[in-house]
Amino acid sequence: MPPFRIAAILIGRNEGTRLISALAAIPPQVDPVIYVDSGSTDGSVAAARAAGAQIVALDMSRPFTAARARNEGFAALSADPPDFIQFIDGDCALAPGWIDVATRFLQSNPKAAVACGRRRERFPDASIWNRLCDDEWNTPIGRALACGGDALVRSSAFSKAGGYNPHLIAGEEPELCVRLRAAGWEIWRLDAEMTLHDAAMTRFGQWWKRMRRAGHAFAEGAALHGSPPERHFVAETRRAVLWGGVLPAAALVGAFVTPWTLLLLLALPLQALRLARRLGLLRAVFLTVGKIPEAMGVAEYLLRRLTGRRSGLIEYK
Image (cartoon, rainbow, N blue to C red; front, side, top):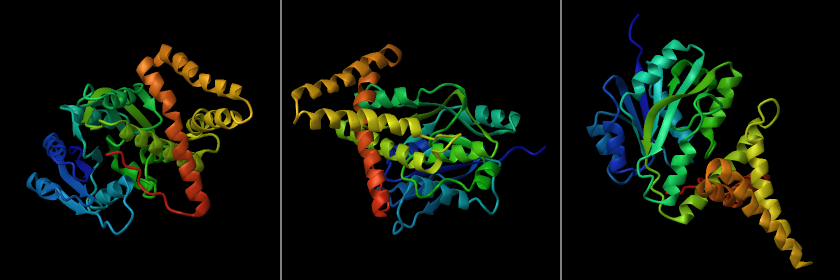
């Protein structure tokens, strides 16, 4: 049997040294490497070309999404598609040995469409926000509902599913996994180091925007696949609306009638204390506070849907 062929699709814009690190970490058995650039002005294209990558330059006159960038990278492989594709975000770098571990797993598990592993923050102690990201990436091992932007994907499954939904500004990976699982495929998270990620979040405002984007993704995902049996992102949307929207609004509006309604806000620290037993105090506090920007993201999606306006990117970097 001939060896399995593996390609990499790396997307980025103005990633600078992070892109160089990402390209250098791709092992030699991965070929070709496709770099999809979305209008960089920092020399990223030249750096990727010097590293031996094939370049796909996105038409930036059309609305950008990461999903569209990955799809166009895959289209560049359509003449001779590989067996597996390693998707990588431009702010990430593969861990040594990951490709071998993930490839062996997909070879041994023909029902598996996606293998992902442990993504870690490169600088978790640089800020609270980076540390929160590192905790967020620490998800359970085994059969999973979704992957993130870094994953080894079976090319045939990706093609039959139609790739990523290019209109989604966030949450495109879980949405693809919904369709893959509906087609009978499995998604697996392996107990192996996969990538180092550089969130580069140093300000509260960056974290706030990131949570707002998550709320938008929850609402849009629920609109697409919220019906039974999947109920995709329905619970996440409901929690954002209740804790981040209804509860604070009821407390503040009710205060015009009686100040006692402000006591409703005590439910937020009580919820954080309840979650802290399982998640730790830091993560519990910001998970609870984060429901407010998540609710804003839900409202933003619903407003744009009602007015027929296309959603724009919510970028935190």
